[in-house]
Amino acid sequence: RLVLNFLVIEGHKDTALEFARDARLKVDDIDMASIGDRMAIRSAVHAGDIDTAIQRLNDLNPEILETNPLLLFRIKQQRLIELIRAGSVKDAVEFVQEELPQLCEHNAQLLSHLEGTLALLAFDSSGG
Image (cartoon, rainbow, N blue to C red):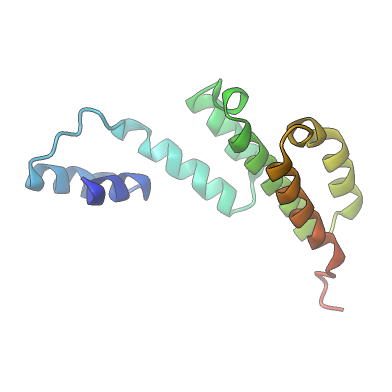
């Protein structure tokens, strides 16, 4: 079952189905149809296309970001990282001021993660 879960999480739908069949495991409780959607979300995040990732998340489950504050924080944190990576310091600062205070104000752990991300602003990404 552990191997099957790994294959599903990593997006190997066909391999997961083959493995489940060979191991005589039930896949009724696994949403195999959403694997492609989840992989598209992951690819968008890896490519730095956070807006597409958010759109796909909302298409898959419109309430997921509203009901999961940690996921919402992490996706916004990734957007911040992409702004910093692009050298858009002004946009990054504005984004933090507008988007993240309400998520962090009652959660010290998220605030700590945000502070760590903001430390990236101290580094010159141009190599100079």
